[in-house]
Amino acid sequence: MRPVSTVILGTGSYAPSRVLTNADLAKQVDTSEEWIVSRTGIRERRMAAADESTSDMAAKAGAKALEDAGLAAADIDLLIVATVTPDLVMPACACIVQRKLAIPHHAACFDLNAACSGFIYALDTACAMISSGRYKHALVIGAEKFSAILDWKDRSTCILFGDGAGATVIGGSETPNIGLLATKLGAYGESVDLLYIPAGGSDQPATPASIAAGDHCVKMKGKEVFKFAVRAMEEAARDILEQEGLTADHIDCVIPHQANLRIIEAISQYLKLPMDRFFINLDRYGNTSAASVPIALDEARRAGRIKRGDLTLMVAFGAGLTYGSALIRW
Ligand code: ACO
Image 1 (tube, helix red, strand yellow):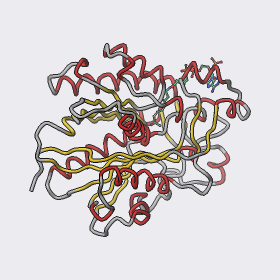
Image 2 (cartoon, protein in one colour; image 1 turned 180 degrees about the vertical axis):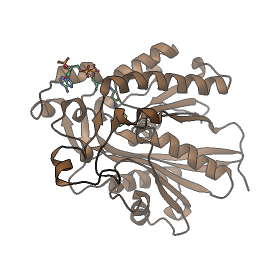
Image 3 (spheres, helix red, strand yellow; image 1 turned 90 degrees about the vertical axis):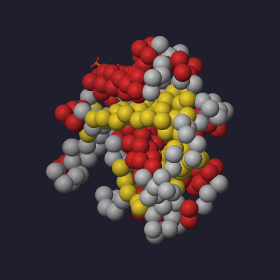
């Protein structure tokens, strides 16, 4: 039977224990606490241990979300892991998480790559699959070990990112007008080369020369990505509100992708939505890519920033260049 609505039944998150501060980074590359804080708002980020994988972090966040939802792994019949840093190129990280959490064999398990917009893409996908009536409970995880794909000699990128995972459990409900009300997803594929990893895929398999050149690490044109981020996140937020006949005043809490405080401040200004309605934790985690929105969502809920009946807006952008927004009534 098709449910009337699709709702978030539980959330969870996990961050590795090792903290890398701006002062630590200033010992490795030519940067400073002042530069990083004034340009990004980031003060520290978490680093996975050498033997800690994306799937380890994803499974820990997933277990917490299941506990919060009051469900068992046996109840899950759909598992989506949004990530650009899967443990292996093949098979999917979701299959490794399935094994770690003992999710049943009849569950559909796959990865989704939309970079930092990945969680919102995965949420929309899971809700559509549950709305079809063919799946009952989805575990949707955003998880990244971004430290594994950074060039630690490139000060323009290595200061921005961190590791972690966030998860949600999604199910159907017979109550109308709650849960996921609307989404807006999109991409500007013509701008692929503003943020990408040149080598290590099938186009340019890794060679000793590509590794020596650092081509298996993230390359980014920061200024262009910044401009895209502000424009795309503002449009994605505005479009979804218009679509639902709402205004910014109706939003109780915004969960933005935690890339850069200046990007969030610009969106706050353009949408005329005060900064105190935005949940921000990038000062502690940096940009955790697909994990950023679900970690922030989990922390916002546990901090009491989201109450029953509230309207939450999630909005993100990422490599691709992709963007996405989602409106949730609790
Ligand atoms: N420390 C000190 N100086 C630095 C550093 C650093 N860590 N990084 C760059 N600089 C220098 C530059 O070399 C440049 O020096 P120059 O003027 O002598 O050439 C100067 O600082 C200014 O550099 P800009 O790149 O112009 O600095 P900007 O104000 O644009 O800030 C930043 C850079 C923080 C990267 C910004 O552009 C940004 O946040 N862009 C968006 C990036 C982003 O969010 N990416 C994530 C995408 S999500 C995903 O899918 C992974």
